[in-house]
Length: 99
Image (cartoon, rainbow, N blue to C red; front, top):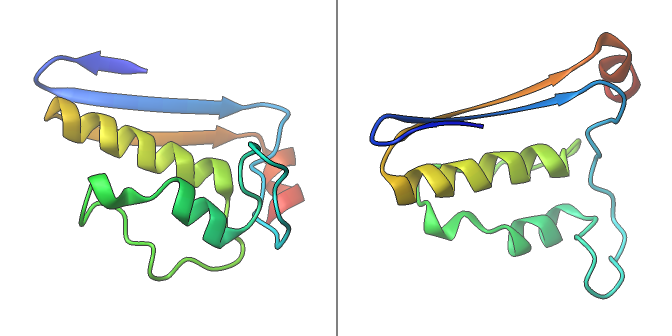
């Protein structure tokens, strides 16, 4: 994370070996992160950041961690009143698994 007060917030996740998990239709255990698209959209609702995240077109494949990595920095930057950027870097092997 790079934060320059009054200017910008940049968050970057680098995944060398772990994949970006895809939502599937299964109920999560009590207290666990949701597994399905609807559960993710409810738990990590972008209501605090209207017009920043449009969930109306959410469909398969829905990458749950990427969605969280979008909602959180957008909310943080909105609170800090700065521009924001998010990057998710994976290696070629991981892309082949999930593409």
